[in-house]
Image 1 (cartoon, rainbow, N blue to C red):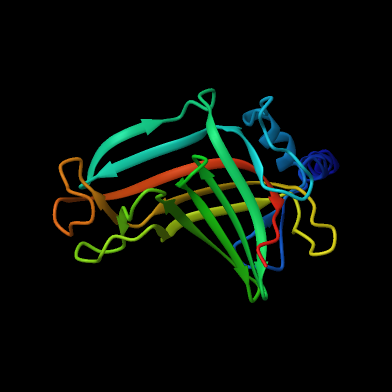
Image 2: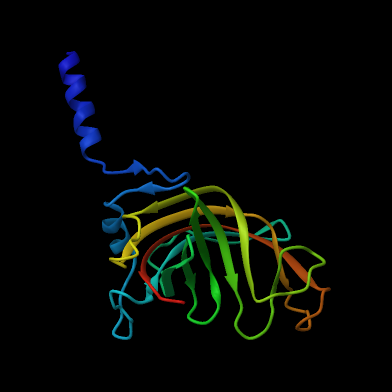
Length: 211
């Protein structure tokens, strides 16, 4: 009987390649590539080069709160929107960005440094400053909001020499941030809403040289 139990346990373990890496907060799982390819969709206009930003259609799970009230919720991975993702190094800091929207947008920012991976909810505006960390702050173009209950999975760690395309998955609950309410005049400190988002996103990311 015990041999049967041991055999089942061995088979279950051998079916998963998921493993915690030496980097705190990061899981390496080559099989995540198969999951990602279920949810993303290239189009005739997709820009898909090995050493370049990845642009394609993607989907997400989102639960959004405005002024502490639930205002949006979707768990339908079949609905897709334009998405972009890329990674780069700044000295010893590896950053992996992914956002819905070609200009500006919202998504995630992974920062890996000193054997630790940290996940932020990223929001970026294109036309004028739209976001603020705190209720009385000036609006700025980009936020990287700290998150809780995070999960980061990568197919492999990017290599500076290979500069390979990587695949991954993130989930998080963001902290609060602020944006202009629909009735606000651009740039004013008043008339703003408090928001927070919970998200789950699969992604494919390519290297870009920002130096």
